[in-house]
Length: 57
Image (cartoon, rainbow, N blue to C red; front, top):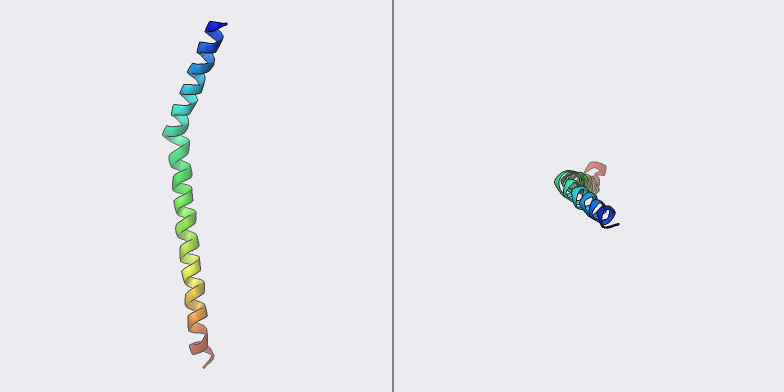
C-alpha cells in the first residue's frame, strides 16, 4: 500500500516536472503567438477602418 502511494506520488511529481519543463513553455509560446497575431490583425482592421474615408474620397 505504501509502495503504491509512493509510486503514485513519484509519477505525479515526474509528470508535474515534465509538464513544467515542456508543456507549459509550449502553451505560453502558443498563447504569445496567438496574442501577437490577434494584435496585428486588430491593428490592421483599425488601420483599414481609419484609412477607409481617405480611400472613398
